[in-house]
Amino acid sequence: MLKDDFKNLLKQVQADIKSNMTKDDWLALEKKYLGRKGELNKLMDSLKTLAVEEKREVGKLANAVKLELENFFHKQKSIFNPVDENKTFDLTLPGEKYNIGHLHPITQIQEELEEIFASMGFIVEDGPEVESEYYNFDALNIPAHHPARDMQDTFFTAEGNVLRTHTSSVQVRAMEKYGTPLRCIVPGKVFRNEATDASHDHTFYQLEGLMIDKNISITNLIAVMKELLRGIFKQEVTVRLRPGFFPFVEPGFELDIKCLICRGNGCSVCKQSGWLELLPCGLIHPNVLRAGGIDPAEWSGFAFGLGLTRLVMMRYGIEDIRLLFGNDLRFLKQF
Figure 1: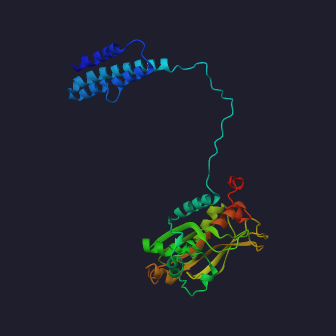
Figure 2: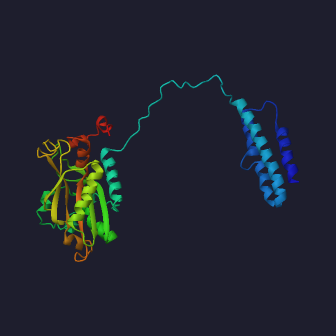
Figure 3: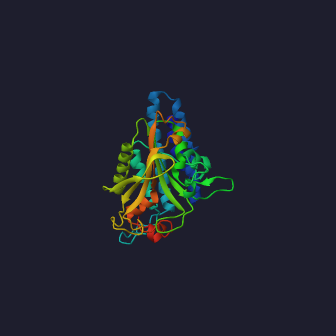
């Protein structure tokens, strides 16, 4: 009977024990009886052939035999791996410090912005950094002869593509992908042939945003911008709107904030003006909507481009953009 087989299993183990067994011998014996294909598991597999009442009775015995075998072999292991009871752990000793990395301040601010816009129903999009002229210029109402291209003197590849000069290059891509209505932001790296100084560099970060729906107006634009600035600076920020020209919006504006480093008194970051250009914005030009396959007679929207790098400088009072890209850990570890 199966019940007797379980009882005899303990006797079989005792019969296999020999004098002067080594550690390897004991491990081999344990594998023979408790291994995945061991004698105990073979008997356990036979339980499924029993009737319910008999299975309950024999199963109880099987568990007892298994426990006894496990305890038996555990005691044998302790003989070969004795515990040094005199060895103690001194809790007063200093711990070992492990150096771990953390997110760059630009990445930290980017993630905060993504959370703020997600709370307003915006999705986060991405696009290629090596872009075609069409999406970087033509689709944004900047044809080849347009003087606005001179304002963004930039880097071209041998194949005729361009290192994107703004994250606005994803605008039409997003329209083609999602249609209307649409709310999205596009954070990322951009490139321009800039002379490096305290507030400019050839490589920096932007966050593009656009919202397209019916009856969108400048009022919607201002409301979203104020919510953005309040969320990122954790305070009310003084802003001003002034007319600005950008081929992909009409009308276009420059949204400036009072410099948070000098509080409007003038410094190298704000070029002694007391104000910092932060948010070029405006209502999306009808030609851009048409490029995205959207009828401007039915839909309208606004777009904006936020300088992530400058925003970080405002948030933390950083006076020189080169500190953010110098890979000086003494500086970066402060954030």
